[in-house]
Amino acid sequence: MSNKRKKRTKWLKQFKFNKRSNKYINSYVGGFLLGLLIIVALYFSGEGLGSSGGYRDVAVAVLDKVSPDYAQGNSYIGPRLASGESPLKTWLVFELIGVIMGAILSGAIFNRLHLRIGKAPHITNKKRLLFAVIGGILWGVGTQLGRGCTSGLVLSGMAVNSLSGYIGLIGIFGFGFIFAFIFKSIWIKTNK
Amino acid sequence: MGPLYPQGIINSEFNILIAVLIGAVFGFILEASGFTNTRKLAGVFYGYDATVIKVFFTAAMTAAIGLLIMHYLGWIDVKLTFYPKTFWIPTLIGGAIMGLGFIVGGFCPGTSLCAAATGKIDAVVFIGGVMLGIFGFIFTYDWLFAGLRKSGKMGDVDIAQWLGISDGLFIFIMIIITLVSFVVFQKWQDSQTKNMEQRDLNELGLHKPE
Amino acid sequence: MKTNLKEKIIFALLLIGGIAAIFMPNYKKHPKVLRSEFLLQELNKKERYISADELAKSLIEKDPSIILIDVRSKEDYGHFTLDGAINVPMEDLLKDDYLGYLDQDVYKTVLFSNGTSLADEAWMIMKSHAYEGNYVLKGGLNNWFKTIIDPQKPSEIAEMPEREAYEFRRGASMFFTGVSAGGVGSSGAAPKKAKAAPRPMVKRKKKAVSGGCG
Image (cartoon, rainbow over all chains, first blue to last red):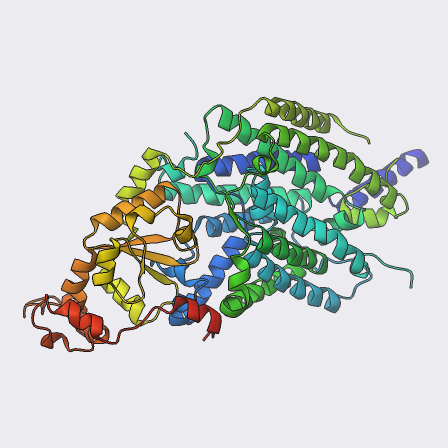
């Protein structure tokens, strides 16, 4: 009897444990599938997976809505509005709509759809959100200057053996490791 | 043969449908691999989580091999596809800015979108920051960024040919580097997680090394 | 490093693929010449055309992204051209000097000749080298004078859009020539007057330096 009970609590414990832990797919399998997806995107649409370009298209559309004269006169985004087509009607914008759907689907399957703030435990929410917005601004500028982000410039760039992709890789990850050393306290609790 | 859309083999409506489908699979893979977890993303820089390196390099190398084989078979003309032009100065500087943004913000644009979609508030804030950054770039482009963004122009440069070796040899070398880095980063992860409590590791979806 | 079967298979595939890759041929070295089928398809698209009205509107609004390229000969260019236009004769099209204007993704380069065809040929040559951001002025200079400098008054029974277009063109004509459209008698006189008249320069470079985003 007691033996049986022990077994049951053990089983229960395991269940609880599983519920608390995050289940992720194997990283190499995920990477392999992602690689195949890059090939599919290039084969069908001739496009690389990307995201910052889509963000820019949204920004262009917003500016065009708020102040068409300014947007069309701006020498950076003006040429994008020259054709008269909506700046939102781009491959990347539709791809990003898909990304949102896919992420929600995966989140639902793996039970990860919760409102929460992701951060290291020792950082306050306020600090985390402040850092998130600063990091976002840096990405906003960096992607436009560097002509793409981790997915579009680096991942898709590496797939087609482009020099640009590898320069981006050195930029983002190379400098990333240097900055990681400097800003260690954001992610790792230091004994001070 | 490929790419199909740039050569008019499929029409634009179908191309849009493909875009949404590819995006959906992309979002699913990113979420399912744990890229919505900002601690996992940051973990690569501190060694306690090698997921990013594993996913990222497996994907890049799988695609690189696949494309070269398809090119050999005449199935795809890579030069008609997306091909980033090299402007080495702005890409290197922009990359450094993005690297800083990665450490401070804990996301990149693609992963933040997935994270926001699954309810991470910090990711929503991050996306707001990205939009602010882009607007700032647009507003200041003429007097601040225009010259820099166009500097260092090299055109469509293939890295292997730039180094003076064949494309295949370059990919082979990269794969060796990739496989070695997998071992190194796994070892690093094991050494870092060895002293962490399993409770902390659960959030990362990792297990203590035996 | 502990690996399971899935991982082993992926590692093996990468390694085998990598070894196979060594024996694969290179991506072509100077790949910037596009295939003829693709070109033909691009040529059939009309997106490269910009109408005289659209161009006039952009010039009046001092659109900083527009660059005018006159692809006619040096003599023709010296005789008459649009204000602010840069002369790139056909034979110099692929010279490196002009690469900054012709192969870029920042500006909207508008090619023009007397009619459409010479500019179209220039566009085609550049497209075949995958140059981006180039457009062709539909109808060329001839049409420019016909519609913008010396617009014809539409008949009384004309539709509203046509009348609106005429009103715009009359305004544009005054803008470009400094003379009211009614005052320009023959189209032959228009070019000379147009040349002397104060017209907006496309001060692209100056704009880039002095900046001002507002």
